[in-house]
Image 1 (cartoon, rainbow, N blue to C red):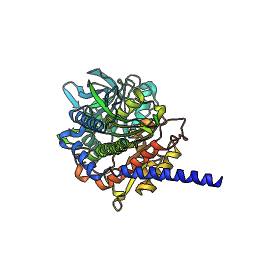
Image 2 (image 1 turned 180 degrees about the horizontal axis):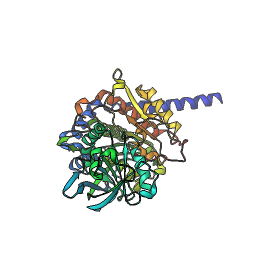
Image 3 (image 1 turned 90 degrees about the vertical axis):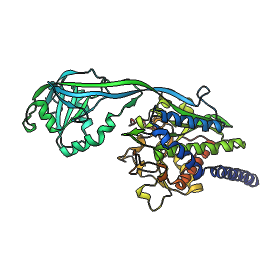
Length: 484
């Protein structure tokens, strides 16, 4: 019996050793040089920042699809690599307050935000309050209250809206903070937004003004305005809506033994486009993740060509609309999962892996991991083992903390899988001063570091796709936290 057990042990050991050698062989096809070649194209000015629904995003989609085709991947969307869907683009039209010929202009004199339908110019009644529970005074009116700072305003405004108010006007008493906000954020708020759903007519109409505009509305000095004071003014807000077509890009490698079980490897290939005439190339966010997916896909494809393909299927998916609210991944999981979510064994999501943040300036061999232990202890342990075996990066779990104020766990495409109880890992290099700026360019990418990170994702994916049993989910939560 001992001899038989020994022989079986040797067979298993040799099998694992062969698998290790195979993984190492194909991981080496992921190179800094190839990553740079892809990224120098996708993050070039020619692609105009890849904003969702624009020419540059379409060019990027074509580039990715051609890469998947060159690897011999199946086109899983009814013979296409494109999962197409429509969004609604909403642009701010004319927003103003008026009394006679005197106007206060939106995003110059005040800030307006709402996702509700607008009805054009109308008389509105405004009422000052310092008691958010005074429901009797709120019905059908725009309720005005003063605030010392911006924090917590959304929650208070929502409470007032639920009490029957038509809208909420916040008077920010700190002029310096108001001026900074209107200067820094108005350009973004004025830009067209995209959404998947119909307008939410229960949404709060939220308006931010300063003390001088409050005085203008009530016709008296700000310090003289009292709770219960009312005024009437004309308000106008117009949204211009139009449909915008976009697409996720999917390449599918069928598993050799368990083809119905699918590992999904994702990144988002969209970025924020052209703002104030400047192209935001998005080399790190998330050109870096996109080209990492392309290189990992090539490594798996090379193995498949040599009849060493993965036992489980692998779906390589670059998604659109992440910058607009995780819309592409949400469309896949909530509207049209090409492969059933119950058969999806895990999602590895790669979003910003090309830079080194200040916290690791002395040692660039690191990566932040988020979410690896949220749903599956097994996935977390597997990830740790792959790193120790192959890459020896510093796995930093700073942003995995439940109390992390950045809430990164809810802010990239893995979340739409996690909310459906699919185990995930989110790979992230941390923030830097070039985030969402024209200065997020290719020459700032640390390609050697990026190569190591890409190989870690490959090894983790390879193990998930080839292990005997699928990853077990052992931490399903009864209550799910909504995404951001």
